[in-house]
Length: 193
Image 1 (cartoon, rainbow, N blue to C red):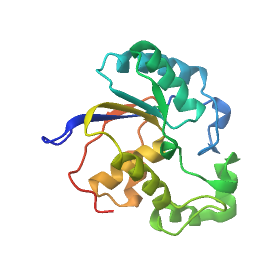
Image 2 (image 1 turned 120 degrees about the horizontal axis):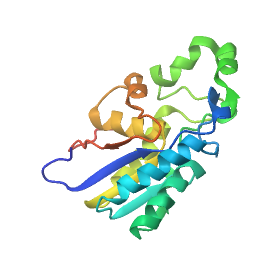
Image 3 (image 1 turned 90 degrees about the vertical axis):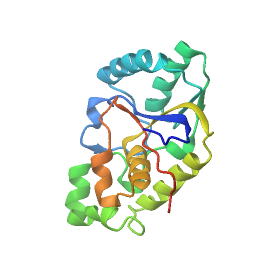
């Protein structure tokens, strides 16, 4: 639900399911492909979202978001634009490694991603707050009117939703939508971050 003074609607869409061989793998901002199911989800989403009066259509630039955005664009004649600020969390050297191997290396320290979001970073990666800040930079530049569809990733969607609702980073994982799910962003009149 948007505020009564807003004349815009922001729809955040998580890309479809990725290829099965990436399940259990840390893929973050790596450019991984969709599964057959993910492509079917994208086709269905494109039909559903194309029925909306979209005025702006953006994606992170990674193949798994661009594919859906281009399907929507083909049905609406609204150009799909790249918004690199929406790219998924940068896990650095953890990228494309099995989560169980990462956990075996660092154990419970992995929880510091959300317990210490301002300082903990995977080797050569980014902090959760750095991800939040780039997503907020994108959000602050959005037009004040229109129907904006953003095809993005679980982490960036959760960071924006969590920040706007005032939830601490430890609660953000619960705000990650399922593959192929879209939500209307509930906007807060002020952002204190």
